[in-house]
Image 1 (cartoon, rainbow, N blue to C red):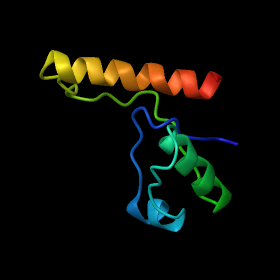
Image 2: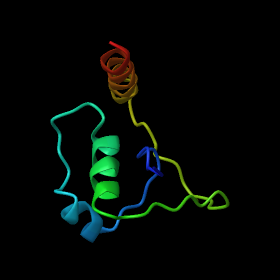
Image 3: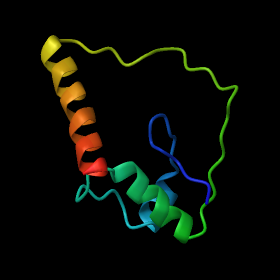
Image 4: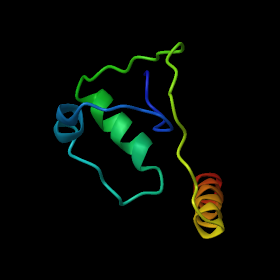
Length: 80
């Protein structure tokens, strides 16, 4: 199965809606959506030569800490 990890994915609204929408019941919402969309027949395309002209700017140390906490928490939940 070809899937989207969500790190830098661009979704069609129709695909999200067809897959049942964004569910926040898990810490891996992006993979949950990718699996449900795949099961509904949606295909994913990897564009290795796509360049983004800007980066998300983390404005404060609080935001940086929160992002790091979420990433570590997700890893702990996944690896149990």
